[in-house]
Image (cartoon, rainbow, N blue to C red; front, side, top):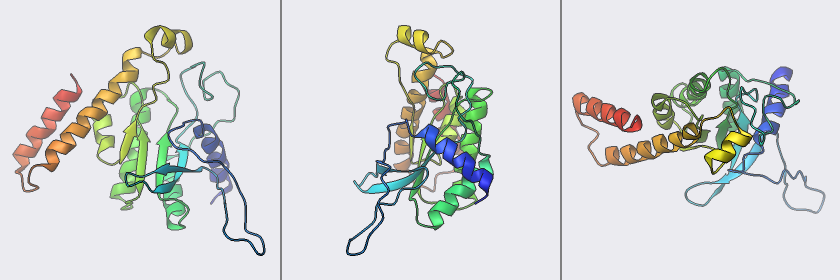
Length: 231
């Protein structure tokens, strides 16, 4: 691993650790003579639980911790004086594959600060998971954080490659959101959850039909999903 990539990984793993959707104690305890076992930590490696109850190790990292928003509750807010870094799509894909091949991890937990605009950021996240699945044939677990305000088309595409998608909903009321995150729109926080829910319903519906469906029928279903996401 290049020194610059390692530097970025340290910064972006640190920035990602505040998301409580998966967690790790961070303990590093190596075996000693007469002892049994190790607790070996690693940069960005955290733990979560699979659907079958297994505890799995994930590379938990942000694509970037730069952000256009200045949310008072967020460590990565625009005005906070912290080290900043951005991984390219290829750097993050290569990191994931390298960690996976070395048996450090079983999957990826990916989030990001918002740069330029929500769609630009979401498009880059989609490129990461798409490349992992289609180029590298990565079959490990992927949990992807959707970006509030991103288009339904990008959220739907992300759902084709991620095992799980979620959205951070830090503020329960619109009034509090305006006080603590005035750059954000209340609807944009909750809208992605609707997109994800509709995608789950569509996936369940598709699983009930034969894989031999004609292209015309598949296209019609795709248009139906898009219309439902945009409602």
